[in-house]
Length: 351
Ligand code: F0G
Image 1: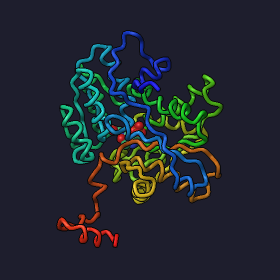
Image 2: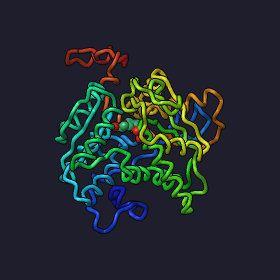
Image 3: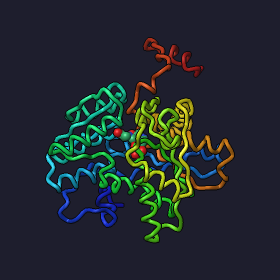
Image 4: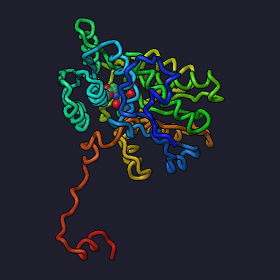
């Protein structure tokens, strides 16, 4: 089998690129669709995890960034900027480096996970912490792109959505058809917009016989789409989706309604339970926000709202290594022993 060439080459005919587009890629995409054995057992369904943490910078953002950065470079941009809860900035920093452009990132002060900050730093981004939330950062980034020669690479840039829609293509290509339900976490609402666009395009081209119902899940403390109004002070342990005024609001609602789906919320407790469950039971380590998709599915199943036998895909959007603080919180420090096999065996209950 040929080596994966990155999503622009793999799906070139479906993307707004031409022969002159300089492809900025780290060979993103082609991520695993892992059967979720225990989630399947609990729900009576055939559940898969689309493991987006397997992308080069550890999140789904790389799909959008290969497109946004290639198009920005084609347009002659020398500098890009984004607002971010952490993953967009990590991805933008890496892809800007790859494309020979400079990258500025605006992040909410003290509210991005450790690994994501480390990524922006090692890739050499210009980082500003803003005394405000993500929504403030995005407004600031938009203002700067209006007044200065710098390209915006947030998901309101349509090239981002084009790249991210390829996750749906991969799922249909893997399964041979679209699933019945697709669950994913929702923050700024770009990704639910992109997945739905991908499913619609593939169905219209005859690549699938159906389209899934889109199930989006927000954190309860940051659930504007569920409440129907802007949340001015969003709060959740899942900092990636700590967003109160999603940029793709209308498109997310359209994806929900056109697909016969839903957008609901899950509490931080439900998110953390699914987060630990995925790591400890399925062997898949995701960041807290990513677990919202599975938390939501389990919540709906427990409420008796999921007919058994359906094929369901949950996108887990980011790698667990992004957020070591949440992984370690409350965990005891491992015991120290001498270099002694008997002592080790005793501690490990092997004897
Ligand atoms: N999951 C993770 C891990 C994310 O980083 C994000 C968004 C989402 C889910 C939600 O996706 O915004 O398209 O609805 N992160 C953005 C960022 C906001 O700046 O990294 P969405």
